[in-house]
Length: 402
Image (cartoon, rainbow, N blue to C red; front, side, top):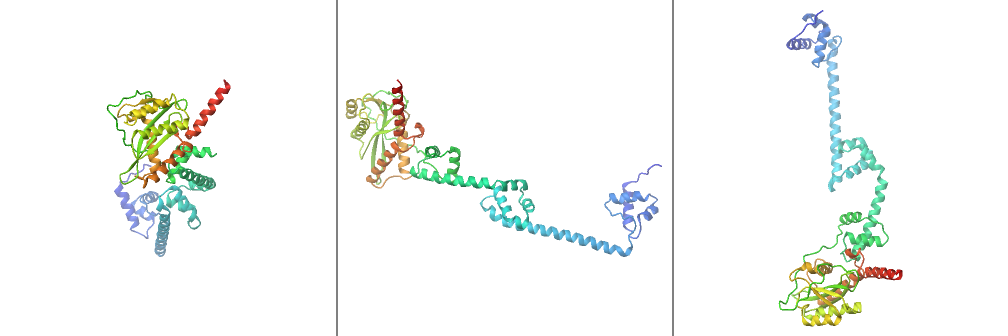
């Protein structure tokens, strides 16, 4: 038997005819059209229409329609309840997200409201995976222990930062903690300092205070920008910097720094920049070392350092003078760096001191701490005097071995 092919219009009309005759069966309609009942049944299914096996009694049709409408209404009510619940969940979650919509915040909200809404429902609404939430719950003890450890370390960091007068940054605080017997990583220290808004002081651009005497006799450069020394009391750098004490008044600080240990071997503070200022600093270094004979002192071409009085003082002390090029701060970078550090850590954002006495006491305290306590990055984060003790111990050991 050859299968007949019916055009789409015929199929649509056949289905429409069946729907227009509620009391008829598929078989009766098919017989009227001269087609197989199963063929008509397939067309009705394809069109998405119900296909009962037999015609329903006329009296039951309204009941079936009412039942379908009730089911539809129940589905809509259920959807409305779900949407209302979702809105309620999101409204409560908004309070948690006020500080940022972090994943951990969502997990915490699920943990706090799971009894009322259930984990599955909350995770669906908040857009998180249940497996991730359960992993977060399992790792809670480890996180609590880590947070406790971070809190304790932050307390130690604050103490070390305060002890440095608020000057230490990550490297020096790390060294301070390690010397205190704490095993810490500098990255962890940096993370906690950033979280606690703790920061060291940063360098500021120094001002030039050198006033050269164009007719003065210049000394050769014996340093050549090599600011290192293998032994103490062999190479020094010197410089002058100013300290404002308000109302347009200044104090001037002259320094003599040992390049081997970065120790402030001598310094002098006065309200003038005469040659006596740098001579006093040189004499202070001589008292610290006992003898400066044979040492090199490198300075800029300031008129104080090129003066006859200072030249005579160096000759009497057995010190060889060395001078940088005119106008080149890099040739005396070690002294310039020391001055910048001193001002940064002494002033800490202020422009000046109120009185000369206040400034003198501040310099005295800082100079003592610089030599005995403050950690120097070039010395392996040790203080100058601690570093010199290490050099002396090494020298004694080599001598005994020899």
